[in-house]
Length: 508
Ligand code: ATP
Image (cartoon, rainbow, N blue to C red):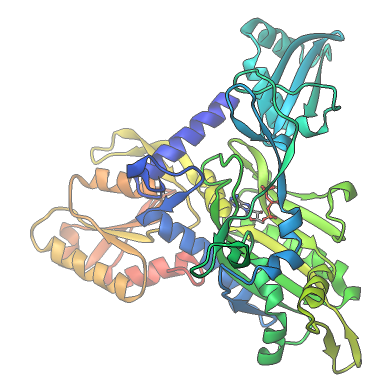
């Protein structure tokens, strides 16, 4: 299982590089850990993800407005929000190899047979389940076979403990080299910088670790200028930065990433309803763009997991090849943030309801998603290997990215069958019509047509149009469907409408 998962991730990372979805940042200098660049295909894909989000939460609604705040803000924002004091990860260092880990991501796993320990390992993992899997993989083959044989017999038991929850007299060991780890200490994840020419404590500023605080800081501006009345929301897409101790799993945990966040303000008495509404609406959004329901789950946090001010929180989680992990969090943050900013700024951030004549600090429901994580989930979901016929009808292996058509980087590719007899000119004219209609289109006249199809399959293009001999007599073309592989003949003048109808609203 784990090997298959690693294999899938490896194949995906290699496809992303080979076909221009995602590159390592500054690769020619050896890269920079936790930073990624989106290539020509990736930038279209991620843009489509962000546009689908913006369309669904802003354009299609009349109770939401957008915002685009600066990345560097007055540092007091981060004092008020609690980030200066609380935005810490527990960090442990290896006294031997000096590797650094998040203490909540290192586990001690022990397997018992009939009550006797038979295998123990220190592993780095995102959750208990992955820790158990990793420890199992590290057991010798004899133990692994016995465990597999007896899995159902109940003779094996597993104990999994997180390093930051170990009793203080237990020595934690390094998952890489086995030397002792230091005690956990706090590490603030905000990137610091200096504003202006002086590099001293008075000029310290931070790169925002989330986009949400810009929304709270502008709450009054929006109320005063937009005529929005409660309940309403403010949405923002933008870069955020976190100095993650161990960036990993490709773009899943990066140091620079993009968030798509909503703060939805309402009367405290309506907060529970709006929380339930957004939790379900956001879950549906991922389904509507092609993530399969058996790979998605909505996990309500236990009361003990909640921040002290939060009344409810649920994560939308996706079964990535490396484990089930968070895509988005939806939280009822009560009036905590607005109250904090009112306190620290000295400004009145309450809301006056003209109808009821009531003045109060609104509650806020926060659906907070990651554009890169969503994009990675859509990439994982799309990856498939199957067979398709080549020009001679023989079946050939192919890699196909089955993106939802709305997310596909290229919507339609146009090919002349051969580079003569006026076919390129005809194909160019169709290509120009697609471009004019703002469809993301691609023209290709190189190599055999079967190879051209396969190249498009690899980047997930839902439709390929071929101009052939018949086109020159009756002005029809073939249009091939990426998934069903069916080819239809349609009028050349119908191509734009055909594709537009099938890629869904707002798709370009
Ligand atoms: P995690 O527990 O995975 O670190 P979090 O609970 O701290 O995430 P939030 O602070 O709730 O995350 O951020 C909201 C969303 O922003 C996450 O659901 C995720 O999609 C995205 N996000 C957060 N940190 C990162 C990161 N380092 N890289 C990529 N996306 C991130």
